[in-house]
Amino acid sequence: MKKLIFNRLTAISDSIGCGGQFELGPKLNLITGNDNSVGKSTLAKLFLWGLGCDAQFDTTWSAFDVRVLVEFRIEDEALKIARQGNQVWLGKSDGSWQRYSKITGDYAATFAELVGFKALLPNRADASKLEVPPPAFYFLPFYIDQRKSWDQAWAGFDGLHQYAKWQKTIIEYHTGYLGTRHFEIERALTITMPKKREAQEVVKKIEAAISVVNEYAPPSDRIIAISSDEVDSLVADIAESLSHLQKHQEELLDKISKLQIEKEVAESQLKIATAAAKELGEDYTFSVENIEKDVLVCPICGTEHDNSLLSRSSILADRDKALEVADRLSTSVRTYEVKLAQLKAVLSNTKQEIDAIEKRCATKIDPDGDAANQSASAFIEGLASAAVQKKVFRTRNEKLGVIKEIERDNRLLKKQQRGLMPKETREDMNDEFAGTLRQYAARLSTTGVNLAPVRAPTDYKKLYGSGGAAESVRGLLAYYLAVLRRIYDRTYAKV
Image 1 (tube, rainbow, N blue to C red):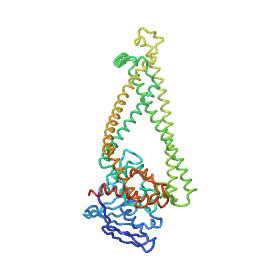
Image 2 (image 1 turned 90 degrees about the vertical axis):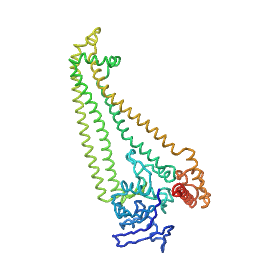
Image 3 (image 1 turned 30 degrees about the horizontal axis):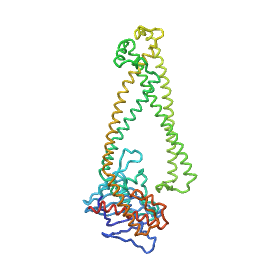
Image 4 (image 1 turned 120 degrees about the vertical axis):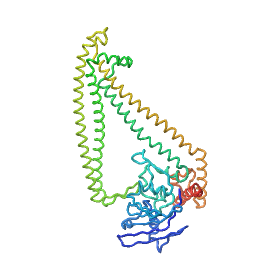
């Protein structure tokens, strides 16, 4: 990663009609005030907030609707970033400006490219989509929040839980366990996920279709006992009288299987829509009866959610939409049931026609048998079933081949990915980190904190609850210093 140096901050609030400009020196900077409540922490947070980090401000400050302009340098390039709300403007050294409507997406990717931040995280909703996380994940090791960071490490900013289980990836990237090649392989692995998922869905549908065919036209034992060429020969022998009926039966079976799948999908969606409408109704009742304020704070990530009258009304609107969708899906399910009943009736009539014809050609199928006792209709139905299954088995085998090929390639990629960090190298890095942690802990006099379980930077949770209150804080400070030392040794010391 590249060095980023802050130069100047300009902050303006139209709501209170004032602003200020603050310049930083090239090395260490100390922010002082006449008393302990003049906004020193807020000023420090504004530098990071301006670049796209969701730092936690008190409610009074949040009401000021502040706009900021941050001037900084990355290596030898002078840059500016302005922010108001979630909108960001990036100013390049050539005088050009680029506007971004949010701090994620394109802006996050642009900022990551500027600072050389290569980490990628999977989208919470779709793990096949790797995303460049917003700037907060770049600044995490370098910012200690005076409230949150002493209770929990790697929690200095809000909004981090937009990604699931991000801690291991981000910590190992910052501390040198993961490099650019790791994420290149990770991207190659995720690219094939949609193709594999699509193939799996096709196989699932084909197996559902086969089960429907077996239910309404089970294959005959006589068909199973003969070869594929013999099946084709038998079909040709009776094609003159049965070809159109057999084709019609195949089409009916195909339609029934497709309708059955569509009906099951609609029933599944109906359950989801009904559950969503119920939950939205309960959400509205909860927001009206249990929350007095117009703001609801998430207990997990601290994000503030609007609970105004307009917001509560939108919950009702969403519930009504869910009910409308449920009504449409319920109608669709009934329609599918009617169509299936009609097709099954037509299939039954077709079977009767086949049976009538087969009574006349039973002796042709088995001249030595007793025509009166022949199950000729079942035999022809078996031919139809075999013909349908012959088509779908070919497609299923092709998709299974695609799945196996993707899984084989992914195994090779994962093996290559594991080889990027040999076990011996990882253990050496762990030993180095543990030794640095103990050095800082000794200098901070944290003898009551049990450091034995902390073998790697990702073991920070094992520090919680160890030692007294003051020692526990000093133990966490020793951990932060050890992480910063690792980052410096692995990254900046090489620049």
